[in-house]
Length: 390
Image (tube, rainbow, N blue to C red; front, side, top):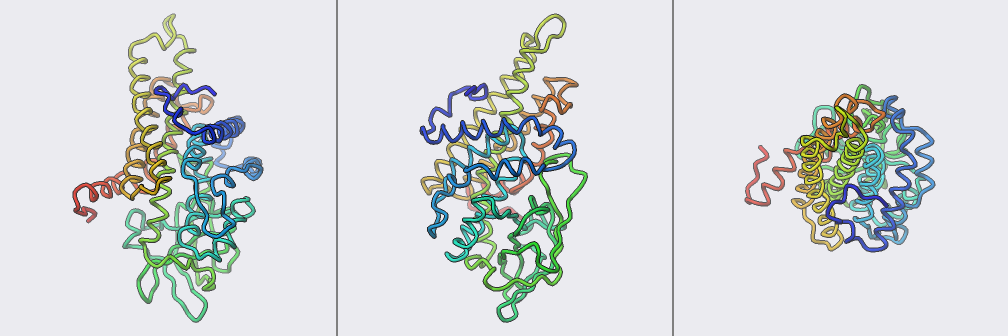
């Protein structure tokens, strides 16, 4: 497997099983590449791509014992899959991240044993598509204390009212994890909401310049009735929601690595092929400087992503570790894709050269799963012992 982006041979530290998983993920992702420029331009997630995912066993291997109660989870497999998918298109990794990390993760972390057994096996087989409803039209980074979607219990039924925004996969999901504030105790609770429930609606968001293949939706909840059996039994405050977000932030760090890798590899290949003034671009000092800066940033974020996944495997990862990984990797990714686009001149904004997609999608990576600023403050609190959020 060609690894033009692995300048320090960091992936040689993978186990044979991890290396094989990564190779399979790359082969699968590359098989989808021919469809992506058209899908990106049309802002569609083609059914053929969804069907291809259904035929894979990646989620089986990431969640190997999901049907036996308390499922172990393989963060390295998750990260490697996210990286290889994002190396081809960020929306592919976002699609899997919503299903496996946010939706399944909510049930895995916050559901009862019965709920895990009921929902996770079908989601692992792609028999059910899931989404994660936290962000709201007027509340993004402030969801910890400002969530406006409400829930109220009456007997064994909960009534949900509110709205959500930016919810990936929601236009075709079978279930959405909805986070709402209890009107009685004011605590945040989570619910497994069937998208066919009366009062639930999802409308595709239009006009995005990034993650165009990802199907984000605005959700409306009008007196949606959810049984107590669908309330996540171990989600009793926003601290439980935060557990899910902390786990998935490492995956977003890997997405940043993948997006940056794809952009760098494309820019490097272009520099070796493109001739100007009678020379290949690769022979110009300024282009070489751009490539060196890109590969330096890329090597740094590869090392950070690998380390944070190992820490997750060993049970040593804390919120500040995943937050720093997401914050730093996303920031460096943004710089790498900008240099890649610049090095390719006008062709850098054409879809046929791929870098335009990476350049646009890096803006979404920079903002989702905790903005750069919020993740900075999480790390800053850990360093100083002082919260500076307000």
